[in-house]
Length: 290
Length: 270
Image (cartoon, rainbow over all chains, first blue to last red; front, side, top):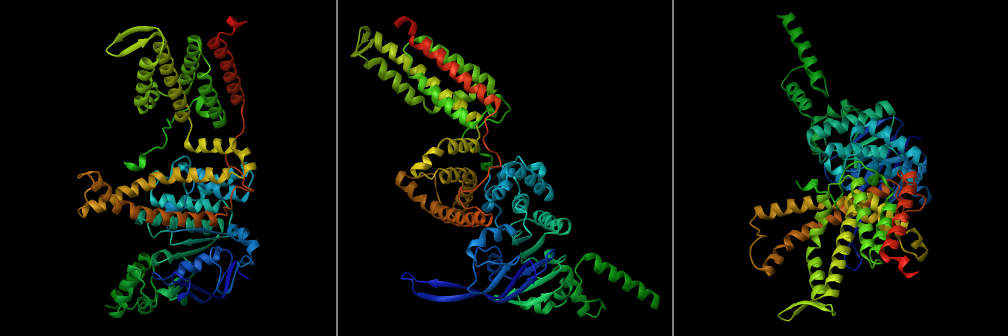
């Protein structure tokens, strides 16, 4: 069994009127099956309201399933007594950097998780140092979070989760409120964690460019998993992605349009380099023909 | 910029006083303030002033920052002095119109003035040299015995430190909302009091809504990081008495002995 596994996961938001009568039921997550292997980097894509954040909150046991089961490192998240262990194994980074930093100094915030877990003081300091170094924020350890940029704050939040030594990190749209530079830094830090530290990463986002380096991509729509595959497999289906109201990365779109006009390119081109390489190869072939 | 607001009035520098355990500073300030009310002789105040001067010197905080604290209580200060000066019965010294200054009045007014000055400056030394965070920590630690009476000491301290963290953020947000409302023609500056109070409604409502949203998010983030109250928590920066704290303790005791002896002129009674 993988580090995170869901089986027929269903979650319903129940709206009630003032008297507590059920007004309506929204199924946010609908029969989702997910199996993430340790060390994997997966991305969950979807437009607003596709149920991706609701799904994320199940992995951290903040929400508990209406139907179906979620296992984190072999533990069922509906077991009340395992809840803290699950939250330690599967850390979570949220969207708004301001609303998840508790400490008034960067290092104190990173120490918050280990403090809650009852880690001895000396070890807390070691963990804080190594986590801040891992996200490249060590030189800011004495700063007030209010003086950092959005991307820096978000990296502090990631360090805060990392200091709890999780096996898996769930990032719930960590870049949605950031500028392009901040986004790039955060994604770079996340990739570093996955590649260097071997932490399993579940990245939830609606920016497709961020998923290019993932092992697997899941696309959600109306609470269901609509597509699943490697980034290449997903991005080659441009029409389908547009149907699901997702913005295809510019490069992929350009390659797709070129191909439609008759330029013989391969499917699912993700980076500018890939495209230029194919185009130069093509030109080489053409000049040889003439 | 609003985000540069520092809370309380902490003055960042490196000094012995800054490094002292907040519990010592809190306790010491309390002892100092109480001691001021036990003197009945000028020598006591001299001793107290001298002690304060030494502490200020050690703290490396410029003196003008201490005086700043005085400004806030200037009105109260003047009121106390004037009332004591004119309303104390006793041997008249000078009188004009219906006002009389008595010898006793002069004396009490002077004593009160000195007491107030020392008290305000004495407590500013503490707030200037202790971060709000440290202060909350110190208070939590000192009030711990109250847990026996079911006082949620840890929770209150946690609330205080979260409030301290969010005040600058909410200030910034207020600024943003205010500008947004002004851009659409809201007027916060003119009109009578009632009108101005009414103008605050469209400012406060969105501010409260966003504060609640933030609170909700923060609670979730704290739970996600395994926060479950004070039980079983360890500290990253535990308060442990160092050598300097014991020395400070001894200094305070010494001060108390000297000033009380001087201030009450014990030897005259014997």
